[in-house]
Length: 305
Image (cartoon, rainbow, N blue to C red; front, top):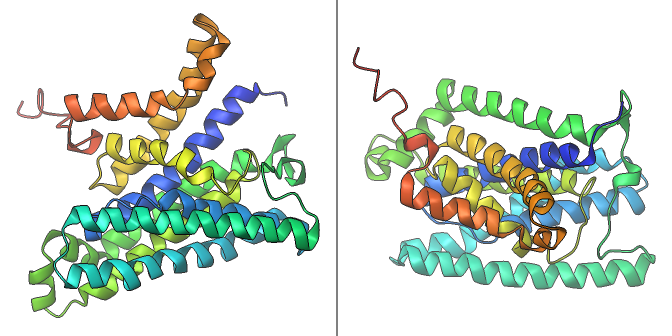
């Protein structure tokens, strides 16, 4: 089954961007801190997939649970060891945000060191690599083209059930709405926040392990991807998981297909300016709908009839 590569790029990128947006939104609605290291957590997943494929000799999909655990634990360490002490000392949101940026710089440096070590120890290319040739096929299509949208569908349903029908979901909603009141009724808010950061980082790791099956991996991939991740969360509404899903799909498709359309109309030189699309979407959202898609009252015009 032949499929135009641009549509494969669009579907895979939009799906994985949605997964990253969900993770970023999940951490933001708990601590109200935008995590600038979030995309680098996905880079960890890319390298786990590289190690699983070239060193462990397994299928790249075997890296998914390992990537979830490692990236999740790194995100948890960021919250427990850096953000929680800052919060306890009354640090402002701006200081906490700068702390995540500093953590990202350290993380990128560690990823570069790891990449160099992999090259020297195993002779495996660990910069500008891709695992596309190691992917499986389903009905003549690359498996990641099926796995990426399936991951979003499964995650969306699972999160909905967890947030609406479990004690943790109730505790999380209570903690995000009023942490002091939640603590007064016996909810361990710190534990809820810690689990949220663990899950958010884990989702980023899963996205990264799948990204490596289609796009080019590199230790510095995080800073390239972070504008798109923030655009997806902002367009969807930073306080809504459902909005994060909508924002990820919209921004992902707009970035890939929009670049293709504009390059065809204006010229291929425009491809180099692809990062301007998510930035333009951020600006448009902040001007037209500051609360994102989730904050728009879609039935305002006809809801009262």
